[in-house]
Length: 242
Ligand SMILES: NC(=O)c1ccc[n+]([C@@H]2O[C@H](COP(=O)([O-])OP(=O)(O)OC[C@H]3O[C@@H](n4cnc5c(N)ncnc54)[C@H](OP(=O)(O)O)[C@@H]3O)[C@@H](O)[C@H]2O)c1
Image 1 (tube, protein in one colour):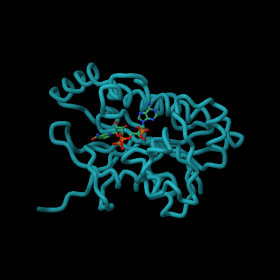
Image 2 (cartoon, rainbow, N blue to C red):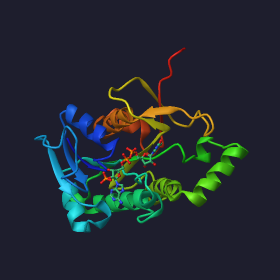
Image 3 (cartoon, rainbow, N blue to C red):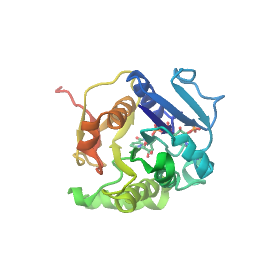
Image 4 (cartoon, protein in one colour):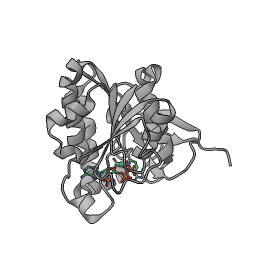
């Protein structure tokens, strides 16, 4: 199978690409700079590097990039810098999701494709019983005011739920929600749950390599995808008894 990965240069995106390659799949990786890319798979024979900033890609170019792909994944995130968080593009995650889903309508004669989005437990869904306590609601309200990426992640999920929905003829999706991200070099046991079991004040941990592993599984494993299609699964590293 072949997949388009955006945010492939990021700390999670690079793991996702590696997991896909390890599974014998081909990857088209969109990166802003080939020169500064320092990943093990940079010159892999099954990787096609597309040097572009996704939001600036003409629609026809993106449709061409998606051609012959079975799906796409986004590990985009606002860079942790003043410009990355408060500068443009403020709707990076949302606009990237819209652009990819829109291109899927026209590519390969509209053959249905999978879209897997990396999101965050910062986005809660009351429909899943994820009611926040008063203190958490206050914190989220504050984050919405001062951190544009919070609003961006919420809007991206709203777009998938309401703009794409569950019966779209060309796109089927999953939005993966990790908790506090950690950097590990090996995958470890992890749990995937339909709703959050931690709070913002007592968060869980999720290693980026596990997120990449789960996203690769969603893209490539029909049963795994069918299990989570149209949902917002939460992923936590498995806690071991002390
Ligand atoms: N931090 C946490 O604890 C946490 C927890 C849960 C979820 N999340 C979510 O996880 C995601 C980020 O994960 P990560 O740590 O793997 O991210 P990361 O290492 O910062 O990677 C971000 C990726 O986005 C790309 N990017 C940034 N700005 C861009 C722009 N304007 N145009 C095109 N590409 C752009 C970067 O490209 P370059 O390499 O070219 O800069 C990079 O590939 C975010 O959606 C975040 O909300 C974070």
